[in-house]
Amino acid sequence: MTTRVLVVEDEPALARALAVTLRASRYEATVAGTGADGLAAIASWHPDVVILDLGLPDLDGMEVLRTVRAWSEVPVVVLSARQTSDDKVEALDAGADDYVTKPFGMDELLARVRASARRRGAGEAQPVVRTASFTVDLASRRVTTTAGEEVRLTPTEWHMLEMLARSVGKVVGRRELLQELRGPYLDQETHYLRVYLAQLRRKLEPDPAHPRHLITEAGVGYRLEP
Image (cartoon, rainbow, N blue to C red; front, side, top):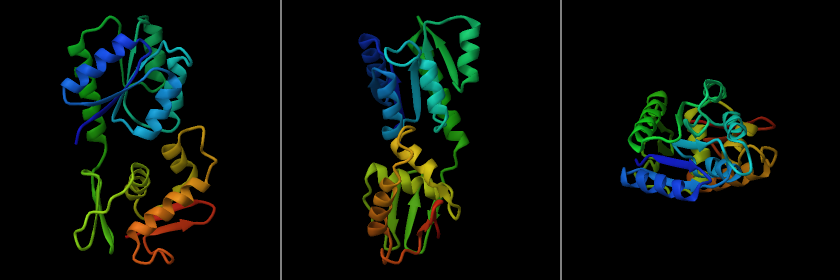
């Protein structure tokens, strides 16, 4: 699968150059020009690596980094004109995976992105979860029925199922699910979870009215039972 890279950079010329270079290197790249847009893209687009400028027009990049780390483990490569040791230490302590100072060489940045993507891949198991009614292949992001037919899911439906599959048999809390699916500022809107789960049940459960795999734990969260 293509590695997704989100560039959070407010300098249009640099952002375009980064996006073009990443795409030429066979990454899937998208750009956010503000911290708020960057947070929204992380929550909705689910990148594999984030390149984050610290000098953003609306939010300080450090604030963006700390906010991301409250609800996501996506690798973050900081890109900044701030070159002091204190700045680098602060960013790394806040959860940055790497720190590149401006001006920089594009080859070096690409090497840092590759390294971050490898670490993410090495740290994540990509199992196949099988239930009596369907199979979830986390590596290929595919869901198939026991008859071998592929089930089409929306990106949000897939991400919710993915989170449940990575903790198969265990309860995943509502707040954790909402922060991943809707972002850090919408973690109280629990009605969205009921909508998404109802959609998944219609597509995956033999009898959606009496689910056997996608289980609700009242007042707590949801779990996937094989």
